[in-house]
Length: 364
Figure 1 (tube, one colour):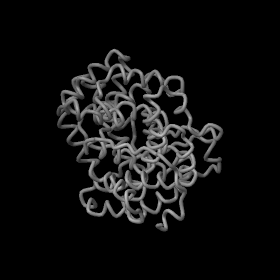
Figure 2 (cartoon, helix red, strand yellow; figure 1 turned 90 degrees about the vertical axis):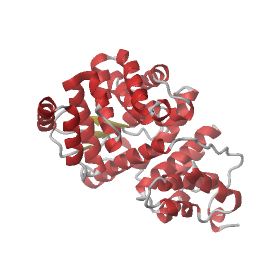
Figure 3 (tube, one colour; figure 1 turned 90 degrees about the horizontal axis):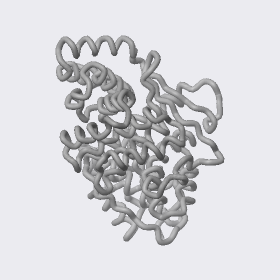
């Protein structure tokens, strides 16, 4: 018996889900997680009010001036055209941190829609974790309501192809929550709008519009006031699963996958607590999604260091959950061109079928 099996508990009959996703979806998720994790660390380091983390709603502001940048980009789009101004914007922000890049690209998307309307959708691209699309779609839906969603869906499919458009559709999820509201009773409406108005085949929906809804719900991005801001949803300690258990079955799995990113913040990276919460989810598929969600956040949060990622997954303290976590973390590392050769080492410490299961994640 390996040292890992001596340290963690064994749980029986846990089904392993193998997502057949394209690399583009995984890379988007990794970047998005990295953005939020950077914001989390900044929020923790700057907190001075001493309020309990479980009961406070924390925010983090960038150093971007909304008023100045809106005026500058509006003028540039009108003078030089949207495409040239966007290229200039990307070059200007190319060396900034992910947090600044993504917030700024959200703001640029807002300005782009205000200036040129729906035709501006052809200007945005995948840069800065598709942030331009997210801001563009949020503004478009806020301005026009749900009637514009099919046009946005069509624009995503036309530009990226039906099977590659989920990262683009992710922005629709953000926009739906911004339009409908961030209250918990509005989230099922947003999810059903995703289901009805976007055309996401199979498992691609796991990283598309649904994920955008949950990200905006747990980590709101505010493009008002003086600077763009991340605002964290407060945790009710009596209800750590928040909205997930009360959703329709089709929405629960992506919710449990996404919620781990929020738990990292509200529980201050207490992976033993996170492991306990994942393990106590009764549905096997939802439990699997939770442990995989842990791995997908641990990869970026450990800077794709396979040793640290492996050690962190072990803190979850449930054997099958550790296997799933290590596999998902290895998958995020395998997507990094300069680190892909190290990805399978995340599975070190596992034996037999457990090791093979973990390694197979790097081949998806």
